[in-house]
Image 1: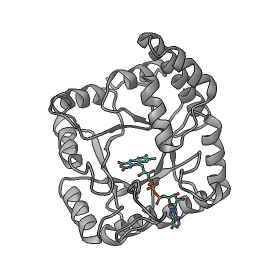
Image 2: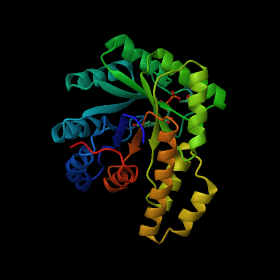
Image 3: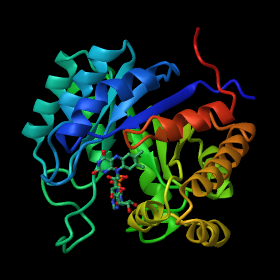
Length: 285
Ligand SMILES: Cc1cc2nc3c(=O)[nH]c(=O)nc-3n(C[C@H](O)[C@H](O)[C@H](O)COP(=O)(O)OP(=O)(O)OC[C@H]3O[C@@H](n4cnc5c(N)ncnc54)[C@H](O)[C@@H]3O)c2cc1C
């Protein structure tokens, strides 16, 4: 279908002993698909920050695939970020997903508290302190970051991250392919040539997809929302419909030139595996 090669899987640090016990098997099963890398999320602003490093080690121990920790800078200090970077470098990490992180609910201003205010400052810091050692991934928002003043201001801010040294971008989840294509066109016109990899959230339930979309400001088209609501009590039916919708989205994106896909796996094997099969993506021998 496409010569795309930027396929990656996102994991989150497990929050229960049961989830932690399951993680090695999740990693091993997803590794069979041969992603370019796994990424591991990192809590923002002091809450839920544990576990990124340990999850990273689980990936290292269970497959030979590259792993990229997310690093959020909101509420942090230069010393703290420097310590994280050194620890990751010592563990053999060569790729970082550099983020501001969500502001605390009590935030009084759009600018993050702490020594870093926006992700572009974190990218600059990584380049200043580690040169080209890390491949730096940043976040992109085809439907605009929810706190941005307007789409143009948000796009200018995205370009700041690229200028600061980002190598590649992963988008927020979205269900309107045109939003992605429009964003990429805008990049091309502005001379931004780094890969913009769509972030893909499988649809597996009505309540959770509403929560994800509301949380990040993503638009869930009315026809999808209504059908999911209708299928809420029919799990297999909902999952089949969700997989069809997301498969079509991925096909459209890849056909239109997307350089790959980043799957938000939420530490589940089946939904990502199903999409992979539907898309006839290759499985290494
Ligand atoms: C692929 C991906 C992975 C993610 N992983 C995590 C994770 O692991 N942990 C987590 O907590 N969150 C994660 N998030 C969510 C992310 O942290 C939030 O969306 C956060 O609110 C913004 O982070 P950012 O790096 O995009 O911030 P920024 O790029 O700093 O942008 C944040 C806001 O500030 C504005 N802005 C940016 N720079 C400037 C500037 N110089 N001056 C004025 N305004 C500016 C932007 O327009 C935007 O509205 C992820 C998001 C994506 C897309």
